Amino acid sequence: MLYVINGEDIPNSLEKRMAARPEHLKRIQVLQEVGRLILAGPYPSIDSQDPGSAGFSGSLIVAEFESLEAAQAWADADPYVSSGVYRKVTVKPFKKVLPA
Image (cartoon, rainbow, N blue to C red; front, top):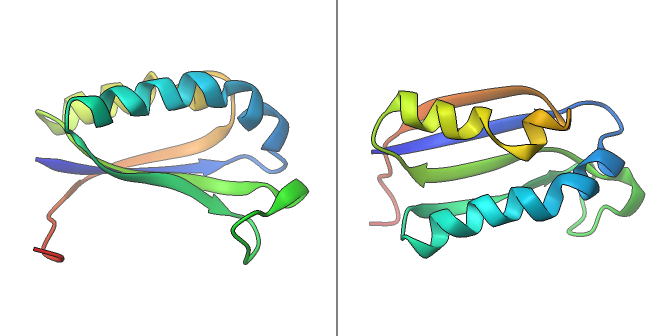
Protein backbone atom coordinates (compact mmCIF):
# COMPACT_ATOMS: atom_id res chain seq x y z
CA MET A 1 0.00 0.00 0.00
CA LEU A 2 1.06 3.60 -0.48
CA TYR A 3 1.79 5.93 2.41
CA VAL A 4 2.34 9.68 2.67
CA ILE A 5 5.16 10.85 4.88
CA ASN A 6 4.83 14.55 5.63
CA GLY A 7 7.70 16.16 7.53
CA GLU A 8 7.35 19.66 8.97
CA ASP A 9 10.62 21.54 9.53
CA ILE A 10 11.63 23.49 12.60
CA PRO A 11 12.03 27.23 11.99
CA ASN A 12 15.31 28.15 10.26
CA SER A 13 16.10 24.53 9.42
CA LEU A 14 18.22 25.17 6.33
CA GLU A 15 21.66 24.59 7.89
CA LYS A 16 20.60 21.35 9.59
CA ARG A 17 18.73 20.27 6.45
CA MET A 18 21.77 20.75 4.21
CA ALA A 19 24.01 18.84 6.63
CA ALA A 20 21.66 15.84 6.78
CA ARG A 21 20.56 15.94 3.12
CA PRO A 22 23.09 13.44 1.65
CA GLU A 23 22.05 10.68 4.07
CA HIS A 24 18.36 11.59 3.68
CA LEU A 25 18.62 11.30 -0.11
CA LYS A 26 20.46 7.96 0.08
CA ARG A 27 17.48 6.42 1.86
CA ILE A 28 15.02 7.83 -0.66
CA GLN A 29 17.16 6.61 -3.55
CA VAL A 30 16.93 3.07 -2.16
CA LEU A 31 13.13 3.33 -2.31
CA GLN A 32 13.44 4.53 -5.90
CA GLU A 33 15.83 1.73 -6.90
CA VAL A 34 13.43 -0.95 -5.68
CA GLY A 35 10.44 0.70 -7.37
CA ARG A 36 8.62 1.80 -4.21
CA LEU A 37 8.96 5.60 -4.54
CA ILE A 38 6.09 7.52 -6.15
CA LEU A 39 7.35 11.05 -5.46
CA ALA A 40 9.42 13.03 -3.01
CA GLY A 41 10.47 16.61 -2.51
CA PRO A 42 10.63 19.61 -0.21
CA TYR A 43 8.20 22.48 0.36
CA PRO A 44 9.96 25.78 -0.44
CA SER A 45 9.33 28.38 2.27
CA ILE A 46 8.60 30.97 -0.41
CA ASP A 47 6.94 30.82 -3.83
CA SER A 48 10.10 29.87 -5.71
CA GLN A 49 11.72 26.73 -7.11
CA ASP A 50 14.95 27.90 -5.50
CA PRO A 51 14.10 29.58 -2.20
CA GLY A 52 17.75 30.32 -1.38
CA SER A 53 18.29 31.33 2.22
CA ALA A 54 14.52 31.23 2.89
CA GLY A 55 14.92 27.45 2.90
CA PHE A 56 12.17 24.90 3.18
CA SER A 57 9.23 24.31 5.49
CA GLY A 58 9.08 20.53 5.18
CA SER A 59 9.01 17.56 2.82
CA LEU A 60 6.62 15.10 1.23
CA ILE A 61 7.33 11.47 0.38
CA VAL A 62 4.81 9.09 -1.17
CA ALA A 63 6.06 5.51 -1.24
CA GLU A 64 4.97 1.91 -0.96
CA PHE A 65 5.46 0.06 2.32
CA GLU A 66 4.22 -3.27 3.70
CA SER A 67 2.20 -1.59 6.45
CA LEU A 68 1.58 1.64 8.30
CA GLU A 69 3.95 0.42 10.99
CA ALA A 70 6.70 -0.18 8.41
CA ALA A 71 6.17 3.28 6.90
CA GLN A 72 6.27 4.87 10.36
CA ALA A 73 9.44 3.00 11.28
CA TRP A 74 11.09 4.10 8.02
CA ALA A 75 10.06 7.71 8.66
CA ASP A 76 11.25 7.60 12.28
CA ALA A 77 14.72 6.49 11.11
CA ASP A 78 15.13 9.38 8.66
CA PRO A 79 18.24 11.55 9.14
CA TYR A 80 16.03 14.66 9.10
CA VAL A 81 14.36 13.30 12.25
CA SER A 82 17.56 12.35 14.08
CA SER A 83 19.30 15.61 13.16
CA GLY A 84 16.40 17.77 14.32
CA VAL A 85 15.29 19.14 10.93
CA TYR A 86 11.71 17.93 11.37
CA ARG A 87 9.61 19.13 14.28
CA LYS A 88 6.75 16.82 13.30
CA VAL A 89 6.30 13.84 10.98
CA THR A 90 2.90 12.49 9.96
CA VAL A 91 2.49 9.14 8.21
CA LYS A 92 -0.84 8.22 6.61
CA PRO A 93 -2.16 5.58 4.22
CA PHE A 94 -2.71 6.96 0.72
CA LYS A 95 -4.91 5.78 -2.13
CA LYS A 96 -3.72 6.97 -5.53
CA VAL A 97 -6.60 7.59 -7.91
CA LEU A 98 -5.12 9.84 -10.62
CA PRO A 99 -3.25 9.73 -12.82
CA ALA A 100 -4.22 6.13 -13.49
